[in-house]
Length: 307
Ligand code: NAD
Ligand code: UD1
Image (cartoon, rainbow, N blue to C red; front, side, top):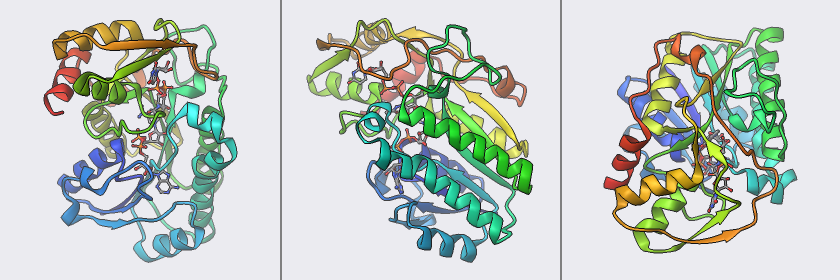
C-alpha cells in the first residue's frame, strides 16, 4: 500500500505519517515547509519527502502518475482563519485550487485510488446558534478559509458521486499537541499558549476569552483518521472532535495549573471572521469505533511534559 500525505511535515500530517509508516504503508510526503519541518516526522528515514508546493501542477501530476497511490491524505493548507482574511487570494490557491487540480488529474488520468481524504474544518459551521454541530447541521462559512474548506468539500464529494473516485471529508475541530508550530502570529492558540507559558512571553488574548472551542489531542485525531481509512468510508463527512466545549479563559486557567505558574496576558479586540462558539456532535465518528483517549487535562499535561 502506498499513501501520499500533502502537508506531511506539518503538525497533524507528521503524526499521520508516523502512524501510516507503523501500519506498514509506504509514505510519500509533499510539503513546502512554509509551516512544517521535516524533523517533525519521526520515521523520516523511511519516508520519501518532496519539498514542493502542492500548487505546482506539473510536479503533482508527474508524482501522481508515477507513484499510483492507494491513499491520498490532503492536509496541505494555510490553516489559519486570520491569515486567510489577510491573504484571501493566495490562500485560495492552496486551500481550494490545489485540491481541485489534484482530483481533476486523478479523474482525467483514470487513476485508481482507494480513498482520497480531504481535511476540512469546523470553521464551515460559522456562527449559527444550534449546538452541538452535526455533519448535517447548516453551514455558514464566514471567512475565506471556511469558504474554501466548504467549497472544496463539495467538489471532493461530487468527484465521488459523479466520477466514482472514493472520497471522504473530515471536519477537524481544534487540534493541539506536540509538533504544532508556534512561531507565526497565525499559529494555533494552544501552541502559542505553550510557548508563552514556557518562555514567559506575553500572550495576546483576542476578545473577551468567552469564545469556546472543542479541543482534540492530535493522537485522537490520528485514531479517527485511521478508523476512517479502515472503514473504507466514502462520499461522507465526519466531525473529528472531542465533543466538549471550553472557553478560552477556562483553558488558560487549566493550563496555568499544569504549568504551575501564571500567564502574562494583554487584551486586544476580537478578530474578524471568527467563530464565537464551537462544539461537535461526534456520534458518526463514534459509530466507527472511535473513543477519545485523551481528556483535555491529560493531553495538555502530556504536551507540557514534552516542551
Ligand atoms: P500545519 O500548518 O502544521 O500543516 C500544514 C502543512 O502544509 C505545513 O507543513 C505546511 O508547510 C504545508 N503547506 C502549506 N502550504 C503548502 C503548499 N502550498 N504546498 C505544500 N505544502 C504546504 O497545519 P495543521 O494544523 O497540521 O493542519 C493540517 C490540515 O488540517 C490543514 O488542511 C488544516 O486546514 C486542517 N485543520 C487543522 C485544524 C487544527 O486545529 N490544527 C483544524 C481544522 C482543520
Ligand atoms: C483553528 C485552526 C483552523 C481550524 C479551526 C477549526 C489553526 C491556526 N487554526 O482555528 O485550522 O480549521 O481551528 O475549528 O490551527 N487566539 C488568541 N490569541 C492568540 C491566538 C488565538 O486569543 O495568540 C484566539 C483566537 O482569536 C480564537 C481562539 O484563540 O478565538 C482560537 O484561535 P486559533 O487557534 O487561531 O483557532 P481557530 O480560529 O479556532
